[in-house]
Length: 273
Image (spheres, rainbow, N blue to C red):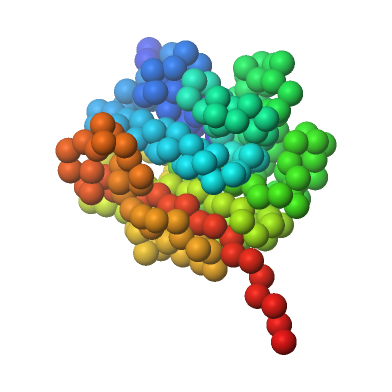
């Protein structure tokens, strides 16, 4: 997804990418000057956001390690961004080399760079597709080559659902990715919550730099509804830093991080009669 922003010299606007903005905060090498400018603008207005993005990347690593430990060998990462250092395939395949990963993003530039980074990795592919069209994702040749829906799959939507307003029925979108999966599959989500501090940051951004990114914030209870019908893995729906951290990952006041995460497991169908 690209967002218009005025260039540093006030001339023609550039189009930074959310994925590349996150790359700035993750200290990656896959962003440009426009992305860095926009990232700096956000950080001025909401200085806690870069920290939360880094926490979400650490969460992703913990979820992948948990899933590998519970026998999952297939991952579908929706709204992936650039699959650079510390992304799903790197973590999973270090633990289980035969793990298969499909990344999906609608940005052609991101997808092209993702394919370059994955070149030579026969167990990973990058789809350029709109995740609003799950049939296109499931029907893609690369998906069929790597993902066997008869075996457990982990679908990951980390920091993705904020891009979908309620008018687009995001709960139905999530269900459309879970329904084709076999029992024992997983759904991993994270979501920025509706909080006064973030609202103030968005308002400040609007006054200083123009229209802020269009996002939909959801509280914990609303977010938890995305897991309806699934078995929630302990510790449940919690602030991102509190989802199964190691001892050295627990910082100060982790419960005040207003981004929640959870991992749901698809239950077996109950027999009738």
